[in-house]
Image 1 (cartoon, rainbow, N blue to C red):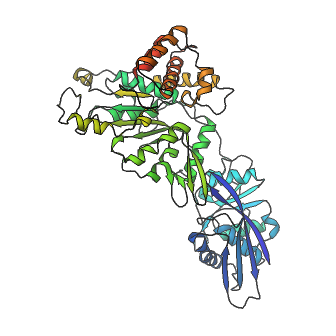
Image 2 (image 1 turned 60 degrees about the vertical axis):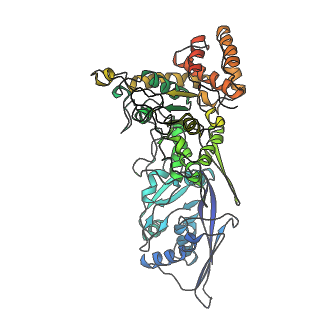
Image 3 (image 1 turned 90 degrees about the vertical axis):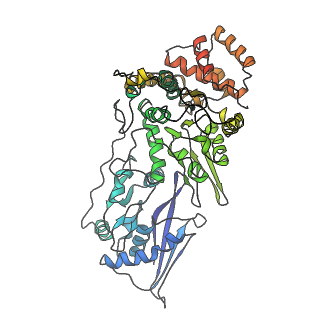
Length: 514
């Protein structure tokens, strides 16, 4: 007898429906359980989990011949998420569950040997793909039900055990559907837990201003300074001034974290912008993503949030250079022999570095012990093309003792965040006819020419600066985008001379390569 049960495979951030076809041959001489359809080892081991789970649930597992085909057969299958579908297929093929109850339903879950249903990763994109394919009911592990219920219009049934599922399919003891999770972002200006308030950071007003501009237009920033001046503290305060996530952005981020299996069961919808701070010893695959089964890396986990790289010059040269394409294109494509997968990577990069190997070049308190050759070689680890993709270059000085010991508080993150929110709102209104743009840093050449209106005086300053500072095309466009953000923070419709002048101050002392 043949039974067909629907399940789903994950490809990058998308789902692909898989038909689990179970053929039961009661006349087979020797017991067998064969799985075909490009299964990996975790899928092949499902036969032992399925056999034990069925028996330990008080159901029958006739020791005859079984063939399980995972269709489409040319799609590689990974992980234990097909266990539940296989078990239901075996039960349907042996007349232990009604076939009609399997219509328009999809099953996801790993089985324990005692028949309980366990969590699998990537439930949100799989549930969304099921809904798009016309599936009406999704059966998942109880701990995955809240995550799946973020997809409106899909009935989600939380399953604790295989035996409980069989009773539900027969209508003997129906399982109540999971309540749909509300799709809304908390309208609050409270700081995320563990984030430093700008008000508690003494001095560094010009650095805070640069970080405000970076947050206002999603501009990359490089902080250079001696050890202990507060670069890391300032970077870790940035999530407190970022605008709140829009619902569309929150769902994007949640899908990535679902695939990476980093979601909390009690709070399936991510409410705050991500902040990722990988160590400088991270591998290339860890940073941009990869592996035999490609999964998102740190740059994708920082999508719509902040990627903070401390001691960036200590990273391997090859690892550093792979950042260039994602910074420019806002996506990363991972190519393997079996195909290519694309993950989003639209993040705000905050990089920090010491000015020299000893860390005290230009310091006001300690003398530098490095030779000019050592300093040049150390700073040269950041290539010109990579530096030219960073909009704001800033030296972070030591804080004066008077400011450090003062009892007063600076401007709070909540006040700064209000200005950033207002600037982002102006950008959203400006980008109404450009749905792919979310912030000023996303603009391409055509959008810059159309949307960055510069006053005649500002245009003159730009033309003079291009010649004197020898700005290349990329650097020129980045100055324009940065000027547009500064104007937005000031509530100006046009880019004026002060906006251009401030943007030019954030260029590196020597122009990068274009």
